[in-house]
Length: 72
Image (cartoon, rainbow, N blue to C red):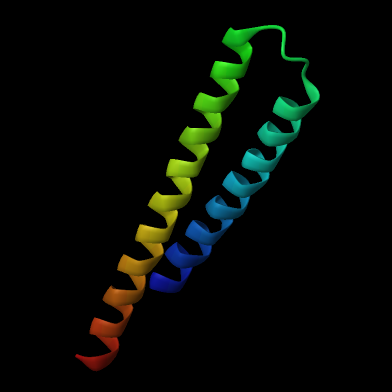
């Protein structure tokens, strides 16, 4: 069970990482004409970056539960 959830979390992390890289490339490719577009892309990047943190916390918690079950 823990392994399946951990693999799912890693998969979500990979999707978030690809999304972050795509948004960063789009942001650098767009001309700096529209401040609203730049602000929206920065907000989206911040949201994806927060997702990285949530995935990391999830993996740490799953590892802790796995260790508890191993030594129980």
